[in-house]
Length: 624
Image (cartoon, rainbow, N blue to C red; front, side):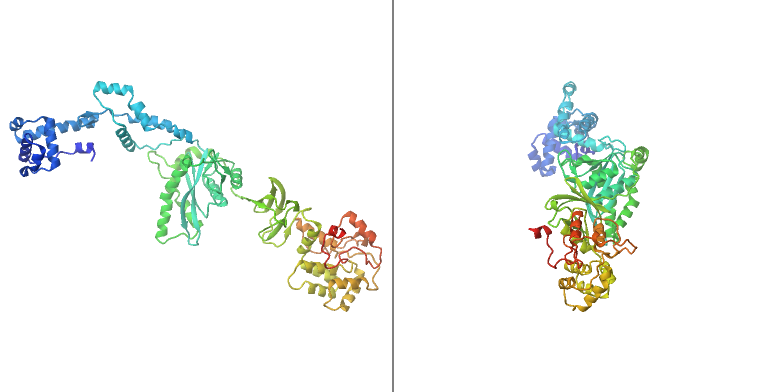
């Protein structure tokens, strides 16, 4: 019980005669003797207090004997009533009168020192209560006043105790930082996790406008960059526009490096800032209190909405998924935004509609498509496999670091920030995508064979004849690999793409046993008699044409891989010139090839059939 409560309570008046006997006895004897006297019925404490009071009133035995019991009681308790009234009015405690501080002036001085933009230096320079006590309350002016009016100054501990009591009795909603409408929004997580029926663990993100305190909360699967960025976009869409700046905490998805003066943002959040048209600012290390609006909104949202969601879960009405959670949150956000702020006559929604809505910056399109940027090392194959498809890079970058930007429709490779190439995404489509000059000739030829559709080879074989088709199917039977494809193309190239030799080649294959390999067939076909001397090539089924179409497909061109059946000018034999294992022809190579084709039996001509099965080596190595 405090002194004020004790003084306001009515004193308990004991039995008049018993009290009279106690006072008369203690005027002569000590408190110990009064305690030992059984007739007086006093405890040790009661005897001590009564003896002390008698000494203060300076009562003697003669004065007690001259008064009746009623007069003694009136004289005894009259001093307490005066002291009680003086304490309430002038701050008297016992016989001492204190100078009552002006806590209103001192509170304003204290708040003025706390009104700053943040930072460890500014926090260190805030005024402490002790400084205000020494400079304001214990000033020379107050000391002079105490000397003139016979008053006493409170001690520091009692001064701080009375100041805390004053603050509790004068709670007024005040905002320490003065915010500008539409200038700043703050984003944070509640740290609460809830499980849905489908097994998803939901977390909660909060976005709040610093001026009006309008709040948005959303359940998200994780704190990853795509989920948190989408929550921020949804929050600004709920507000109807964006602010000039966005304050965020130092979570890993947003800040790759945090420091004393702000952090370095990830590529995803830099793209988010460009999309929203606002600037980002992160909190210095251990200074999360600078985003106090978000911290307060997190506390209110947790106790107002998430607590109700948890109660619903305990009652057996768990949410099916995150979408159902967000639908419930949107319906109940008005519990926060439409609630009148204590001490004000308006709600967050009213303040927002009146002062801040027109200050937000509109966004034309709210469809956010963020890309992911990864740092990777180019492997020895100089290609990356992404979602079941290979993408090639130059071979001179093997072992180097590159940056991969994964967008919804395309992939972009960078080297030290310089764009290398762009590929259209081919998710779950087996194959390879490349660019011109990225693959050596040998590797490019292998890639073309791997990308060649089997129906095109079967159609080419059918154009030669049924025996050729039968032989090609036997070669390509079972699991397809590069050696089978090479042998099939080698077999189809034996007639040298001359339609006049197709019937003779069919007759030749019919005479050969099924087990005979392509290399032996090439040797026998080279010396086979009665070949035509025509130099007119097949207008449709030509390896050069097949190679060019598949190569264009590898380079990302939208080409339908099939034989073009339209009538073409029949090319002359000397215009062809694909060296089978020297891969794509060049102008110089073409002249050399055509100059060597003088034998009417074409036994020395360089063509896809003029090689052995084991000649898969670099032509430069063969020259060495």
